[in-house]
Image (cartoon, rainbow, N blue to C red; front, side, top):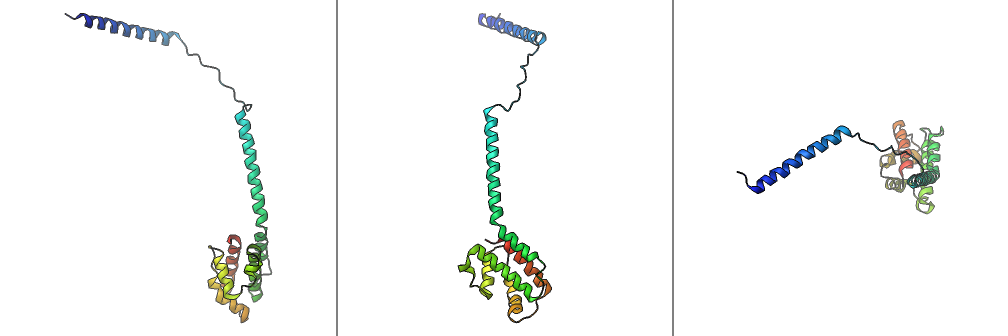
Length: 173
């Protein structure tokens, strides 16, 4: 024979589970889910105004920075245009034009006091120290021979000097 608390527990738990199952089945069978109406999309919220103003502000800032950088680097574009012109050839005049252009760019960037009196080995050391991506040490001897001894410079060395000079113009400072 079962004890009284055990009988009461069986009655309570048995009754509640049967009633819960029946009520859940009734809800699932008879009721359809009522979905809320979809929320309409609109740009009329303050968040979109803030996002639009922030976007316009960023576009203006980046545009101004781009214009400043573009104007600041005008001398680089002009120097590259000079080196790309037809005046530059393999003669000693071509080497002179390259070195003149490099000197003008260096004076524009570093100032006349620092650069104007440099020549020979000091000039090549300055070019090497002012840019990490270029090295003029290999051109020192052939260029100085072409300038001071009136020797011709090898075509391959001249082309390499020209491309290194363009690279220095683009990457110095």
